[in-house]
Image: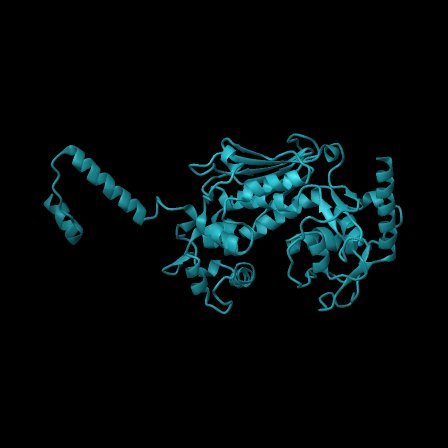
Length: 424
């Protein structure tokens, strides 16, 4: 015992215990304090915990400054863009003693999945009513929370039906998606923002013939139930430090109105009321219309309609990165059935000469790279649209317009849609 006391030295704390129960309680309390100090256990939210593997170098500094620019415009964020990164992160409670939190990695990390491998979003599109392999369309989206939300929403929009109106309603060609974009976005944002990031599961977005399902690893906070989500309720974020910047960037509200908005938007669109189900995970179901449930998904129609929601303005920066400036694969007139639905949508909304960001805005898409890779570049490579400055893809005044084959295909698409309307 003397040797042990000498070895511990000044770190020794002497305390008298009057019973075995007192000794057990004291040892237990000391063990808990030790585990807290070593950050093996935590008592606060996961997103507030400091990450022992990450540093400021693992954060994308440009993302942080872009966030401040957006937050100032949308929510009146008080700090100027010129503030130091340490000041910005400290203000958001994402930095403590020069140590970054889990939330800061999920929000602004260069490679968030390096630290949280399951923080991805898996999207799948099935032509039937059940999960059946092979999966017709399957994508796994990585990146920060904003990128994952934008890519997942754009994936869903590219697979559901859309009605393209005429310019009689507005100067901009109006479009309306079969599922309300705001409802889809709200459901996916909720899943990404409020999921349990300690789970080995990932957010799953699955589009079936009759419904959209969003699976969220985790359960509802104590005090909430699926029934309460259908009524006014208080906001209880699972990850409060993650939710605050998403609110400042305009992705969520902090009033507990998200599920109510999903219900309202679906009712206004004439859809069956959405469902909220809590089992091992939390699931949101948004139902598709019976009409489209019997048709192939992703069809473009020409029914004139008025938008109930306009997409938020996207950055006017051109998305030409990766363009070759050369149009290849000239297509003959008999190609309507071979053209992807994404390319058809570009053709139908393109009037005169438009910036790529304007086309993206009309289509209500948020992720620039997704739009570029799945819409703009295929339309260019197929020869249906062309650049106004083909020899200078990154020209500041670059615009896009229909080619002769694009004009021809647009007429065919409109005539085909009009014939379908007459048959109905």
